[in-house]
Length: 172
View 1: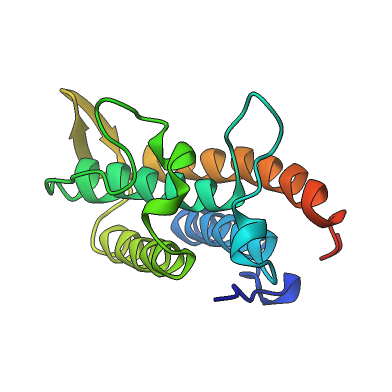
View 2: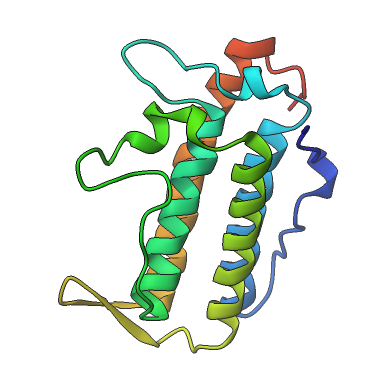
């Protein structure tokens, strides 16, 4: 399976809009950027590690961000029980360490489905809606800002990993 996303297919970022539109557009732009950084690579290339001692890879980032989206949107905001797919209580880094437990196609489809579910949860609630994580209240607004930060940080990692694989051949 090859992930396909072009730079110009990413979500357009409005320069003037209401708060919800700005937050959700920026998050979708960063989601699209991760897909773009993974675009056109083989399964083996997606599993290439960044540099020792890190076990980070593009495939690991997709797995990690699936867990992050599920944790914040599905568990914290929607209040649903979530069992980790790629990590365990014994090894929270398993999503980066054990890349052979799920195919690239399974990981990418799960990430896409999780992003879609996060969008549904977001659309059904006000920005002031409060969910709870370990007894602490978090507003949907806070979660959206945090996920923008999370994706932006990891997209920086994705840039470096992509450069290691093919010199950043996708451009920009």
